[in-house]
Length: 114
Length: 177
Length: 239
Image (cartoon, rainbow over all chains, first blue to last red):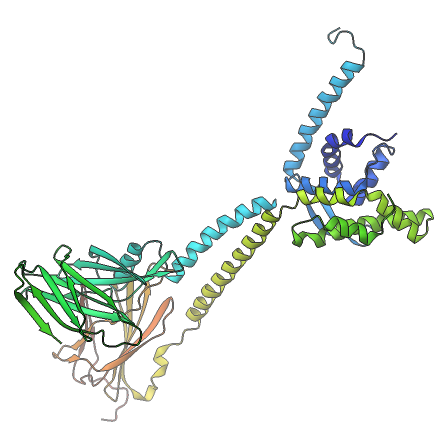
């Protein structure tokens, strides 16, 4: 199933920061990880990852450095910063509230306090 | 650190580094601070500033300190900063003469300054080597100052003679070089 | 959309990046991604040309990518960052150079006493007199009397305001002896620097005088230094 890009754009920050929180990664690694974990639900045009990554760096949530990758070639790695970790926690909370609200609307719970 | 933060950090460094640079290069933010530092450095003063006058290269600062009178020069540097000029020390004036004075020059910039001891003096005139006559009726707390600039390569602008007049135009004092 | 080749893709993206200094890095990052994807397709069995075309197609629209990337690379911020970096480096280098050469000068200052050949010395006095006028400290260290009648006064002077600059010291005052003679002829040398090493030569100084008097009295600054001399003491018993 392919999910509409607009839907994804809103939670891209959450996805990326979450992946980088586990380990430093470079662009292509992030794409492959996203595909693998979401069982290919999340597939979007790969080049559009980079404007998002660069924006995260500009805002101070991640920082980048050059290092030799597993392929033996130099790659630009991204690393989450303290500010990024705080933002990740924030986004996780927002997502939880959001998904809970959506579930409540569509989940057919007659009475939230039932 | 984001680029914007780096710019801010650099700006702070630059302020500190620039101040250090100024300090090491003898540069000052105001003409008077350059003047005060110049006096103290040459072990003179601190004098009381009586009059400040602009000229091409900076300012002339006419002062008195105890029994001395000086006319220090401070020069403009790097557009908006100031540095020492020349002749910061003064001459000890003779109170028995109706007027006492001295003069100096730096390249084509000349200054002549002194004190008026006889208060009948209303006007002072000086004559230059090429015949030009300069007159001065404005006095500052009993001190006077003439400044002039020679045309390039013209050495006829040297000081030749001085005359002091009272209110009726009578000569009270004169001297020729 | 017909699959464009790698170079066309990259060129299109970069054409939208206004801050030129970042283009190289962006090119490398995107190109590496395309090549990595291409290698994966080759591993799946595709031939290189096809693999590359597919990898480029997977990237998406180069115009959209270029325009979005450009928003994150503001040229004004970029240039400001580069220029302020360069200015900081310039100033730091200048300071290191100036401070460095001053310190070197200080460390490797010659002992001026060595300029006088030992056989010319009639007597040498070690002095330790300090005076201060305004922010300048003058420290008299030695007096050496030579056979030719020259009296040398060795002293150092420095400014207590450290890193600042100012006029160099004009003179140490009038030179007299206890017999009433005042000395005018002579010369002086100053090394300059943070601590200036100086030598004042006084010509035809009296053999009989047994006190050197240095007195400074200008513009309400005064000091008087009296240095006892060993008149009659000779290094060389020639006389």
